[in-house]
Amino acid sequence: MKILVINAGSSSLKYQLLDMETESVLAKGLCDRIGIEGSMLKHKKAGCDEVVIMKNMPSHTEAIAMVLDALVNAEYGVVSSMEEIGAVGHRMVHSGEDFNCSVLVNDEVMAICKNNTELAPLHQPANILGVEACRAVMPGVPMALVFDTAFHSTMPEKAYLYGIPYEAYKDYKVRRYGFHGASHMFVSQEAAKFLGKDVKDLKIVTCHLGNGSSITAVDGGKSVDTSMGFTPLEGVPMGTRSGDLDPAVLEYLMGKYNMNISEMLNYLNKKSGMAGVSGVSSDFRDLCAAAEAGNERAKLALDVFSYRVKKYVGAYAAAMDGLDVLVFTAGVGENTVEVREAVAGELTFFGVELDRELNANGVRGIIREISTPASKVRVLIVPTNEELVIARETLALL
Ligand code: AMP
Image (cartoon, rainbow, N blue to C red; front, side):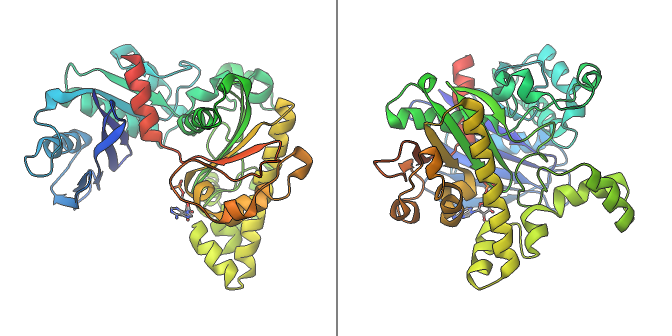
């Protein structure tokens, strides 16, 4: 079966068409500037050059229609008709407490998703627009939703409750939800497969380190704790997000800088993290280059990041009372040697022995081990693939 995977943002829409027999990507692309002047579709058939098509896309409906046109195009398409697309898998940010796994789309499910937009006001409405546009253009094609939060629904109360009055949870659903669920699920399962073990027998800490970062404790295949919380602002400092912070800082700095609360949240979401600490960039490639060239604040930002990631690894080993596997994934986790070295290089107390040669060298883009044979904890780099998880989940639901 061929499955179309859609990840809709407010003005962009990413897609991939996968052949599930081989789990290979037939074509992928991006609709950019939806609803804005100068909208365009960038489409790439596997093994061919990218084509760019400039066309007005006033809404997500036109965007999806353009994607389908591109997929059946005689020159750069990959299917002869739309009927070849057996199902569509959509990324949806928030399941609230209503879904603990992926679900097939129907009116009732969509009504619940709309009800949860308050929990993810920036992303959920765009995800919903993507689903609705697809349902309009592809009536009768089965569709599934894969949530960022659902994998973490197994967290126990003691892990997801904040230390604030219980009524905030009961009345307003204020609790920790966690994000990047599809990625944490995927890499923990791939790690177990790679090691020839059943994920049910393993205690794994998965470090999804990218522009946004989160760490998850996966015990027996289930998420038991994760570093992001009510929103993706909690946890380790990220590209531009602060991560964990004493909430009293907000009032103090709002006074000093004369900011209102939305300016403060913008400061914490967009101006903090690596960009804020370093004053150089949010991008780890830039930070590593600047640190190498002697920039002290870039070096400091990398130290702050790696130290906080390491603290979460330690905390989650304690939470699970053990650690069998440490996994690095996403842009930074897969590519930034210095961060892996700083996080895993001095964790010998936990039985982690990093092989520095393997960490620094090796083929990118494939799963590989970077711990020594003597290491009690196996350390792996596992490339994440959120589109593949969405497609697999969709297929499983069918
Ligand atoms: P992500 O959000 O997973 O796409 O990760 C983006 C982050 O990964 C950026 O800070 C990049 O600088 C970092 N990164 C480091 N090396 C690479 C690389 N070779 N390719 C892509 N991203 C990289």
